[in-house]
Image (cartoon, rainbow, N blue to C red; front, side):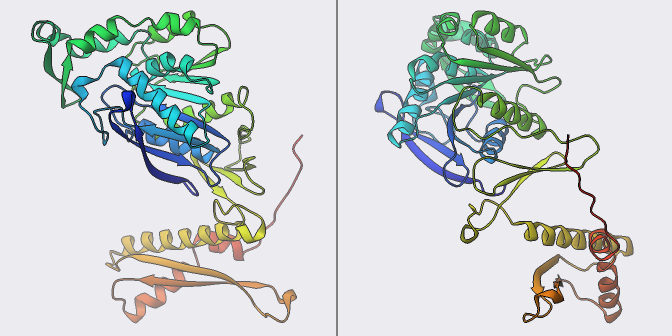
Length: 402
């Protein structure tokens, strides 16, 4: 996640009562568009889906505020005294906080019950232009099935302790009454914002029929994206990154000054490098299923959001060297301790630029080595695949794509 700035912030929640803990993930410079991410029922801002999507969006130039609802995570307040309506008010408080910082949110993203909350809150936040839901119920009352075995006790005693995902929560009659009174269909009919619905057909927590109901109740512009075999919590990193990729591309249709969508990697190529559109030189690198950033330092006119081109070349050689030595040591069953590799690029002759450059590499091994082991490791280092690529016959064939 090169170059991402992740900072802790806090603001006052609904009714000016509780301090809410939040985290703002953004690229250097703040990002061109600001989003709020609302987490799932009884979850927190740090659940994998929230943190991974926020980080992936930040890598694509978006700033993302994710926070703990009142009584959850690191936020103040009692969960037993909250309900769906208070969650909606917390979202509005988050938007007010960002507006007060001069960064009013333009995108709301909600996961599970957080998705229902952003649908209810969007019409009350003037700056919002686009809303995305992930595995959201079409009716907030859907969550009651998670503690249906305690419903009678809650009505009779006013509250009850329930267990959700191995944790204990107090659910009040106020909560049940509040979710039963919600009319999300009316919110959708009057949304007047672009809507993107993510849902997994195999979601066994919130069924796919909920996505159909949301889509049917909403007006255009609206879109649906299937998450195929993802689970409800998006526990696989690839699913969260996919959501961020699609969301970033989709948002560019409705929000000005957002990063351009990243081009697809041509079939047969292993790495794709493209401009992010968020800085003078910032590049997005897609290598396999991974993203990283490259940039120039500020003194060269860049934003310093990632290593420069030579830094990436040296990094590749260093990583390959360390990996090759580790594989060899394991094969030989040598206990050599930790391996590290330092590299730098220097002129062969400072007075003669035409003399070219050389890479200087220093390998450090924590464990004791015999003279024979030292000699062998140096020999193996020069045989690492990247070393051999850089020093062997190498041709670079370049063409302009049609």
